[in-house]
Image 1 (spheres, rainbow, N blue to C red):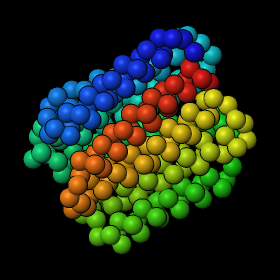
Image 2 (image 1 turned 60 degrees about the vertical axis):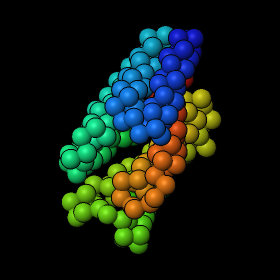
Image 3 (image 1 turned 30 degrees about the horizontal axis):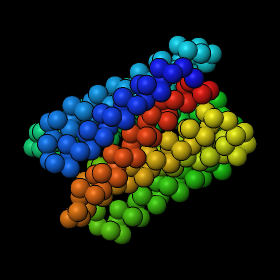
Length: 228
């Protein structure tokens, strides 16, 4: 893998750390700018990784589409921080963009990694678990957003199942990066759900964990292009 990939990953991490620090100090605008730069860094890592070893164009394109939809989701959810009056509209739209991004990831993984039907069962179980948790903990999720979140979480778990099975079948750097990245995505979005939909008081701690796992997740998924 080209050294430039590591440099871009390091710069992305620097912006991510800055975003976390600004968010902890309630400096929403500066945090949003750093988040956008970090999101741009994900895409740059994938592009540079591919140009250094252009062997799998379809996987690269699918991952890039996933990252670009994630970038759009970051923009929408970032605007929410400086324009909270649009929060109720921006969260579903931002979630939908991320959902589309996860679909592109899944298509990329299904194209490259071995598939087993049991991974679908894990995905369905993940969606059902999300529904049960939302209801059991009386999370503030309205009727229109509930099915979107259940489908979203089903896709997250499905991603982990696909990449986990790939690691079991063929321990490759790309499969391992995709698996760890997918796992971190679940942890990140779980913390985000707690922040958005529960009355938890110490939200800064959850925001810190959410951002600290989200950025490594996207970096690893982007680097899987170079590792493929």
